Length: 361
Ligand code: ATP
Image (cartoon, rainbow, N blue to C red):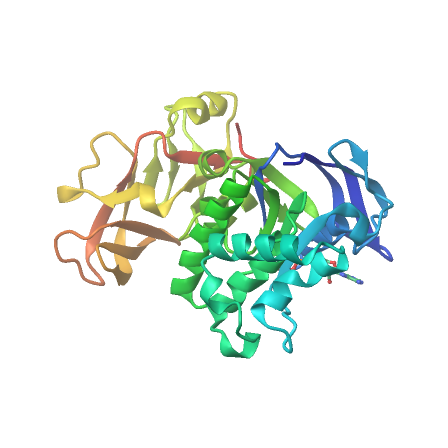
């Protein structure tokens, strides 16, 4: 188990800032997910931790040892990348044994370690095969095996599942989480898939344009995003944003809607007047019978789109000038063009400053 500390970490390419002032201290054995849109600096951060990319300034410590100037081989860090390059001419066994041989382990010790790791990953039956004779998921498992067989201090995984189909991704996602929990290896995991981030990480680093926007638990990031970008990036379908007027009553209103903030958002808005960007997640919206919203917020409009999702349905409703997305349990039949009133769950409204995009909290 290891603690990794990134301190004021920066990377510039010429005048372009790829990673800016990144600060993070992991717990022992923590699973950290870096998430963000393409080009936000995730891979550059990983490459700096691995020692493949020199940081422009700042420090990287592993267990209190300053590794900033060290090369990759000195850091005891293992990596699995998207295109998990296995040696094609070697068997699975030889692929996994390779780095242990380089370390001059004895044959017996290598054999024991390779077989133990293969057992943990359920690939014992594949040890004699060459990579070409493996499925995508099996290859991925071997790549994981090759990385963990040497029990590194830190595990770095950069979009390791992106070549797999949807079903296998979900399976492997669960396996990776279980494996890392069992081995208690501190892990950094890169994805651009917000659902993967929510389901896998102890903590998530949401990045944008080289800057960490928020570093927190999945629950806190989902419940209290610090700004509009995080609110829109985490959660699917994305949060609805509506330009609204703050009324004296505390309601946030606009053409066709009124939103009733609760809790801390309501308190924070007491200090403000004028306009605000209100946010409500689609999964916190549902239709009400006969258009009565029972004192909660309401959104009135006509259904523009219906997408059946099995037990749930996603709809888009034209509310004033805006399209509002809602997702809820399938109920009585609805059709495009129907008039509908939606309400939101109590305490589910967010509010963002229209100038800074920051949450009012
Ligand atoms: P993706 O999800 O597409 O892999 P990312 O978040 O991993 O993106 P990085 O690969 O870290 O992003 O790149 C961050 C930014 O730095 C990008 O704008 C990229 O073009 C730039 N960049 C990365 N490596 C270099 C380099 N060697 N020289 C110049 N610019 C670079």
